[in-house]
Length: 171
Image (cartoon, rainbow, N blue to C red):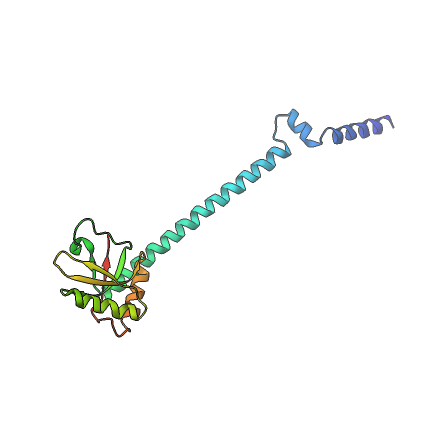
């Protein structure tokens, strides 16, 4: 009977002193609080790692889409010209990377007329002066090659758009 009482007293003291954490602490082992903190830290690190992986997948998809668009441009024998070849002075900056060019004119009046046709159809036009004196008319500006290529294909069905429209690459 004394033995049972001693065991019961020991069990009661263990419960009052914090259960296993008391003995874990005495043995220099992590307590349940330490284990929970470690679990939360591991979860946060896993979430951060997953965000990095998702970001990487997004960049890979964008690169893949751009490469597919470049292949489509090459296969369709479309023109894409860089501003290094055509731009006027160093001070002329375009706000977007790509433009669909719907004409290049030696006469400013002709450039204005083409820009007016585009604007009447709902496409705001940008007039871009070139070193050789020509004024080009660009529409559908974008920073995405995929978007500008889709715009070029859509514009080809518009009455004001010439069949030889091309893409300006503003690098």
